[in-house]
Amino acid sequence: MSDVKKIQMTTPLVEMDGDEMTRVLWRMIKDLLIEPFVALRTEYYDLGLNERERTRDQVTVDAAEATKRLGVAVKCATITPNAQRVEEYKLSHMWKSPNATIRAMLDGTVFRAPILARGIQPSVRSWIKPITVARHAYGDVYRNAEIRVPGPGSAEIVFTGTDGIQQRQPICDFAGPGVLQGMHNTDASIGSFARACFTYGLDVKQDVWFATKDTISKTYDHHFKDVFQAIFDAEYAEKFRAAGIEYFYTLIDDAVARIIRSQGGMVWACKNYDGDVMSDMVATAFGSLAMMTSVLVSPDGKFEYEAAHGTVTRHYYRYLKGEATSTNPVATIFAWSGALRKRGELDALPDLCAFADRLEKAVLDTIEGGRMTGDLAGLFEGEAEVLTSEGFLRAVAEVLI
Ligand code: NAP
Ligand code: MG
Image 1: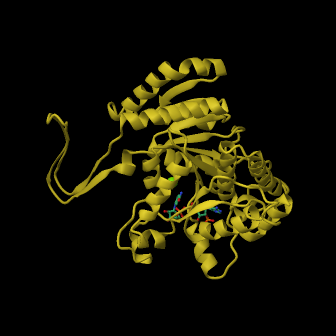
Image 2: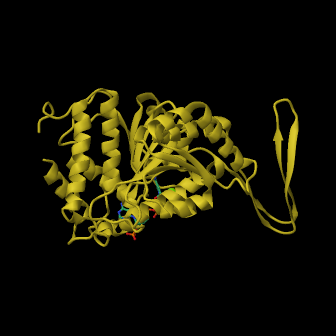
Image 3: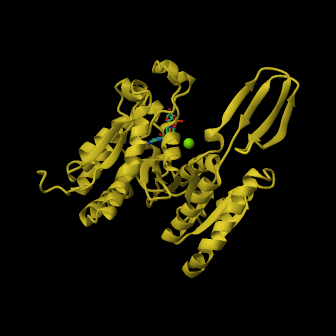
């Protein structure tokens, strides 16, 4: 197709490239499913680990700034360095998780929802509607301060107000070595998290559930509960009643049990760590980690779309040995379609929105027609043809043309 016949864009997307197998898929998705149809405009940031090292992670900050400026980003999965990666990539520093940096800069909430395809039954048989996990994207253990306690001694937590007044709490008298951690959150961030969840619930007309461990964490977690309730009562109760939906708070362990017994169809608001863990559980129970989309929404309406899974390292090492892998590209495709659709909505480009719909339908038609990657084949109710990543993308492209 010549460029003039392609669907036009006005504002570029912020494109954040990534690492390993998902970086390989990224290129193929653009080549086979996007660029033949859309005169793609992006502002490109390479968040691959080598470039983060070269720029001393400035590229991540620049990409987040670009998202604030342009409003919509699409991100490939990236390596979060650990000790082994520092060795493997000869890093000068154990750079922070790019996602943590971006989330902190956008002060956003991450909404993760499974992609449902007919023929792929959730492991939890009662789930007939998607469960969206809304993950608070700021603070707690992701912004902690940690100390390896070398030996006997005492630990306390101290807050010094700008007025010089201090509050102190003993933590532990260590008889021997151990570990120590300090965490925080802010009313502003908890408040935007609550508003993002209530707004999203109204948008999709689904109940909003929230849960913490307030019985044990009587100040920290309890405060989350109070902030949610105060904002709900003051700003959303009436709107929820009019929409026929509910806000419901319970203890995190009770929520887990109830979610498993439910039919799905709710927005489950989770604190940062709970959301990290529960979204992987929900995704896997709905079929595959590779069928979970993720969007970071900031309080002032900036959007960053990505797949919920990582860089699929084990597949990448096989790919490097020259083996064809059957890595599922669906969540990464939906990150692109989500970002293009949002760009289309913001720029009033109905053709771009329609293309996003067509792309997603082509993916689902391909799977529902029995052609899929290996992770899904074992879950499929009919006869499944297992394709390589590239084979699957080509099959989707055939449907799309
Ligand atoms: P992962 O990349 O999500 O992969 C874990 C396993 O899940 C894979 O080995 C594979 O299982 C299966 N899987 C995940 N995505 C798949 C897909 N698209 N198609 C088929 N199977 C898929 O998690 P990880 O191995 O824990 O992490 C790898 C790297 O990703 C780490 O460096 C981590 O820091 C990073 N990470 C990044 C993000 C992000 O950028 N958002 C999120 C999480 C992790 P089998 O091997 O059994 O086939
Ligand atoms: Mg995770």
